[in-house]
Amino acid sequence: MKYLSLTLPGYTVSPPAGVPTGGLELGGDGQKLIQLGVNLLFAVGIVLTIVFIIIAGIQWITSSGDEEKLKKAKARLTYSIIGLLVIAGSFFIISVVITLLGGRPSFFFPGY
Image (cartoon, rainbow, N blue to C red; front, side, top):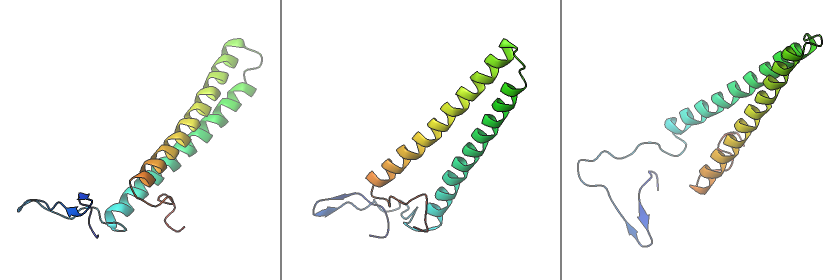
């Protein structure tokens, strides 16, 4: 089946006349665009997380014993790690949903 449509065991439900059909074909340009967008968002999120971890480390080192600066550096480091966990969790959830909907488990890595 080239296009996504509603199928029931033994039956195929066709759209009414005049309703456009087609859309995101498997392996088509739309799917590639979605893959690129999601991969780009994950990459930007991971790079930003690494930058914030480095900034938190620099703040920690330059706090020179000041409790307030040290507290801010610890908070930034904590929030950066939580952000990384959120990114990893969303990556996992999207992969599971795509697999459950019949997609390839390697959706984010089209070469594999």
